[in-house]
Amino acid sequence: MADKSKYIQVFTTVAKRSEAERIARFLLDKKLSACTQIIGPIASVYRWKGKIKKSKEWLCVVKSKKDYYGKIEQAIKKIHPYKLPEIIATPIVAGSREYLGWMQKEI
Image 1 (cartoon, rainbow, N blue to C red):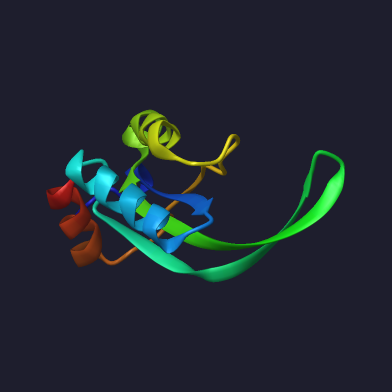
Image 2 (image 1 turned 180 degrees about the horizontal axis):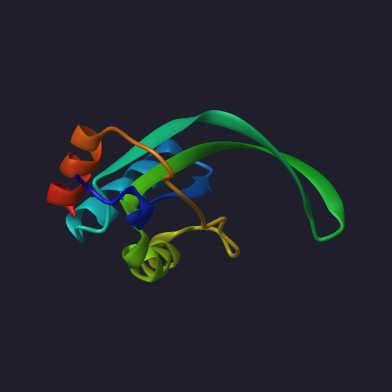
């Protein structure tokens, strides 16, 4: 059985679907992710430089290994169009054995 504590989901947002697809393919090509889901457009409301802003964005949900987080962060920063991109990770605390096994084989 795959050890679920070693898997994460990494989140980042971009302004265009094409940018999200570029990040997804870049991470797949480098074998840093098993899958990236692209969700959007979504509305993001945030504070930037003292002002409240609202933007339409696309959310990337990257499935990977916890040990790969540093490489994923570097890869995203390398091609991300934002000055300060959102790059956060959460642990996968449960998942089907089959899906986690598939992730293990892909990355």
